Image (cartoon, rainbow, N blue to C red; front, side, top):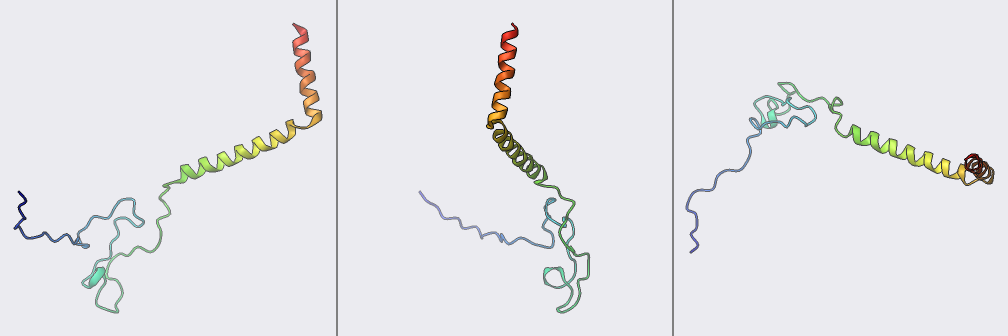
Length: 106
């Protein structure tokens, strides 16, 4: 049996003047205050409260991931250079002589 709800629908529109600002948002905690829409003063006037002036560069979210990426690229570059060096005939002969000398001592 399907019964339709007779209760009035709740207003799901958030009240931006009292909504919490996420702590991770740039300029977190700073919300313009005033009497006009979006916290500004009357139309055409300057903001009446503190206003976010730009990005919050103190947030280091993702910095560790970027560092891992840079270190990984450096390691791949070093491995490539090492592979090129070890592929040379002179280096292969030197390593072969080193291994033969180590095995002949015992």
